[in-house]
Length: 211
Image 1: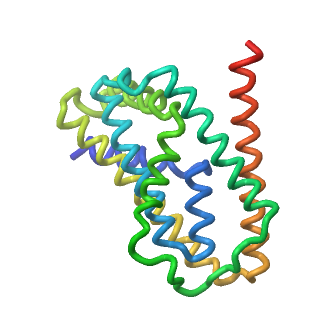
Image 2: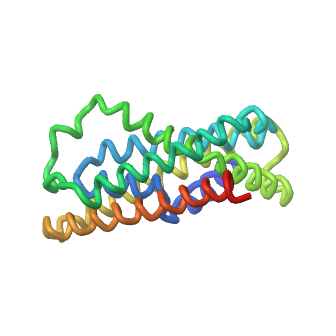
Image 3: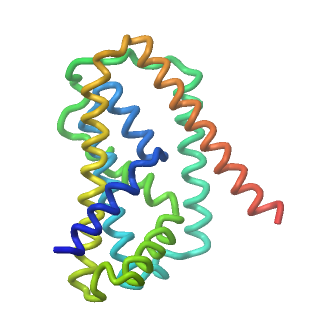
């Protein structure tokens, strides 16, 4: 049980910093796509469990492959560049501050999107290998299959709760925003995604052609 609690705390706290998946969840929640937002977050949480478990069980080499690594570096650049351009410079849908028919059952693709966005960043396995080394090095959990599994499940639960917290906070405060404010906020996140895509693209270019 201690392993679950430790994993839960680590999963919750380390998901708070704003990153690509948080941005996707925020943008969906701002336009009342709360179900879609949670599906993206839950898909990401499942990948946390898988990656964390892989790192703790010592099978990270299964995921490491030069071709896959290159593909998963190109994929996030393309995704964020596309959505950055689309959100920053094209017409945005009108914000919906009431329940929308599009946010209905049948949005499994957003769960898969959350998994794909997570999987597109191969650095996560290195991150979880590092976390695994820390929790084992400081003897926060026992070196048993049971504790490793409980720690991995705990991280997934913590990540899921963070996304639920994030969506709830947006739901609580967005009614104070004027539609134009929501539009400007969405544009801001579009520009932010564009910046992220340019940084990813530059890093990819410099690693492939400038070394």
